[in-house]
Image (cartoon, rainbow, N blue to C red):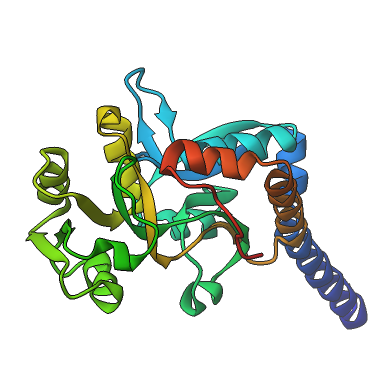
Length: 263
C-alpha cells in the first residue's frame, strides 16, 4: 500500500469512527424505539416518589412518570434502582436512558448532563389538619409546629413565621413525624417527600398542604448530546401538563397539584 493510500485509509477510518460516535451520541431515542425498552434510573427507597409497595413492586410519583414516558414512546419501562450517589453515573455510563429520581437542576449538574422541563414539585411546606384554617403565615400565630432541627424547613420557617409560633424541634424526621401524628403539635413543617409518605400512612389525620416554604422542582436527567430524546421527553411532559396528568399525580402522591412548573 502506498503512503497516499495509507493516509486515505487512515483518514477514512477516522471519519467512520467519528461518524459512529456521532450516531451513538444521538442514538438513544432510536435505540429505545427499536428495542421497545426504556431504561429509567429510579429511586426505590424514597417515598412517595419511589418505593417498593406491599406487592413488592416499585410505586410512586417518579415510577408513574417513568411509565407515562415509556408508554408515549411505545416502549416498556425497565426500572433501574439507584441511589442519590449513583443515579448520574448510571446515566453517563448508559446503564439508564433517563434519570427520574427527584433530580434537582443546578449549574454543576448541567455541566455533565442535560435536563428536561420540570415534571413535579419538590418542596418544603407547612401541613396541618383540613379542619385548621391556615391561609397565610400570620395564621400560624400562637400555634405549635413540629420541625426537624436545622433542616431546610426549619431555616425557611424562621424567616416568615410570626414570633408567637411555638417550635417543637426534633433531632430527625421520624421523631418529627411521630410528634405530629401523636397530636403533640398542631402543624408540621417538612419536605414533600416526608409529608407525602406520612399522609399515605396516616389518612385518619386528614392532614393537608397549607403553606409553601421553598420549592425545588424535579427534572428528568438526560445524557449530554441526546437532543432528540430530550425533545421527545419535553413534548411528553408538556402534554401531561396541559391535560392535567402531572397535577393529578402530584395531588395523589404529594397532596398538592404540580402547578406552574418551569420549562
